[in-house]
Length: 370
Image (cartoon, rainbow, N blue to C red; front, side, top):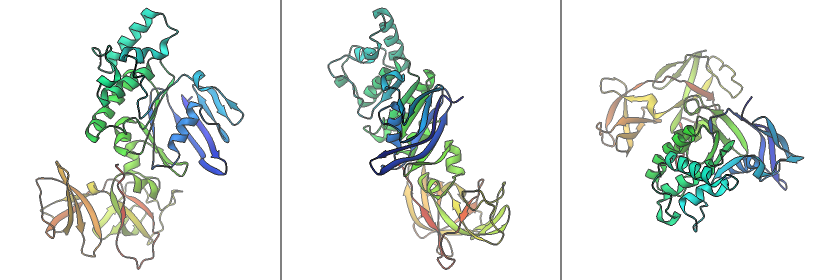
């Protein structure tokens, strides 16, 4: 049985339905994530799990117990749920140790001190218990907030945009630390974020949300390489849709050559096999186009974005269509230069063509990494 189960939940504010028939399951000890653009309903789902919002339909179970239905709501304080907020919500007049001990008032004093010492060690702040929040950095305050949420040994930990107030470099480093801390505590957790890099760094499973629905609940690897629909393909990573023609069940012709799939080519969300000869859109990621000086196939550098260890090139093909290629940065080519490329596509992803055949060129995918 799943540790957390949401079964076809709806939530509405008046006539505005913000969560629609949403379902997910999370096993004990796993970290899940709700990822999506602002306004998609992900924080509302978190509030439903916490017991702050009443469902219009469906049910929520935690550790086998029904905690929410339209007619039944277990109070938040009885759900054994810990929460970490984006503004930390630490008590400024309490020391770090007293902040962590805040939810342990029913324990004997000696047991409280022992638990606080355990948590301080777990989050790497063993010598910091006597300090006050204003004496700590943003990253340290976030770890204190995490330790406070973990202190009562919650059945489930909820994290609502926990890194949004941190700078980019600290956000990336702390996201890996938070994952390690949650795993070391053997805690089940749900993270909410709009940042796919945070989601990939922290979560075992991710649900891509749009307009109150989960578009795909899967591993980070599958979301990137096997997107279930165009929205997921567009939201995760970067790439383009290049026009293609289906040759048979496992081969599709694009301008750069023939792509061979290990599985039958699917042309829709219902996994229908693409008809032979049909026009399709083929998803090409930057890592599918490999720079190769020895290749007879060339493309013109139309744009370049230096990223330190690598350069993201936008390449113009002979037809005028454009593709992306991620290349080690010691291959520094000028705008307008022709460079050799080759295809290296392990996962062939196709969608039914949505534009008339006369509309030449690829459809670019937006990168969401803010």
